[in-house]
Length: 100
Image (tube, rainbow, N blue to C red):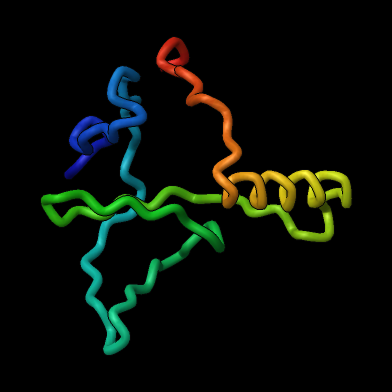
């Protein structure tokens, strides 16, 4: 059986130790004709997917915010930021290493 310690860290989390987690369900799955798999008893509707070079796939549950819950002001800021980014109007990269 695999634990979280068996999964290699991604570049973002390289310096952060992995916590051990208990496997509560284990089964074999296969791809259907549209290259999809079924997650039995899925507890989340959305997942972030990470595919590793050795063929392993890691799914992490995600909670998405309904668009109507985002304020008009925040949407305007996002639109303006996207336009600035498209024009190449961006700030210098921020060093986040101290948080790792």
